[in-house]
Image (cartoon, rainbow, N blue to C red):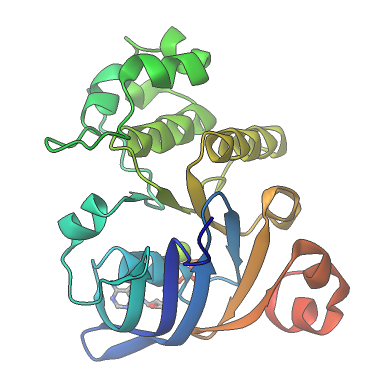
Length: 236
Ligand SMILES: Nc1ncnc2c1ncn2[C@@H]1O[C@H](COP(=O)(O)OP(=O)(O)OP(=O)(O)O)[C@@H](O)[C@H]1O
Ligand SMILES: [Mg+2]
């Protein structure tokens, strides 16, 4: 196995017009890993996802499998194997579960793209809902649909922004299990989370972000032991 990270973010700055939100973020995701990015509201976690996907103005270095991508456009980032599940889940109401999945397919789908049947065989509860209007799904089911739709294009890595927001504790654990299952299929995950217990349980590596920079990098155990970081940068 090569040591080249799947995703390597170095000194990344991001801007909304004149507003300078990211101030030099460093972060790596290796093949097969679940990496959790934790931090308080407003520190720039969603902006980092958008910067990685090239949907906000960005500077610095973002390498995918060693290749510099900082000058690329969003559709090119997707073609390099990056999937994105945004905060609002972006489910299309008025379309069925299956129609939503089909919308996740790329016209130039590569060899790793999933078929609908593969998604259903991994996630049978979605198959039971295949003809249901996506709008009537529960919060947890909508999140499952949003992640599976991202899998349809065969990504190497999915960026998942706060998948458990607004979900009940039991469902949070189920969404955690779903991500662990996705990772076992060989897809890496960059998980933005507030739910520390779930994130720390499934993550291989943890970053904490504060004020537009990464302020901690280590294992879940190392973060638990680092009371200063927890007190300064997390809601604990
Ligand atoms: N479209 C935008 N235009 C201008 N400023 C923005 C925009 N989106 C976010 N910001 C600002 O950028 C900063 C970081 O926002 P971001 O959404 O990345 O934070 P976050 O860590 O994801 O927090 P949360 O999801 O809890 O809101 C905030 O100060 C926010 O007000
Ligand atoms: Mg956010």
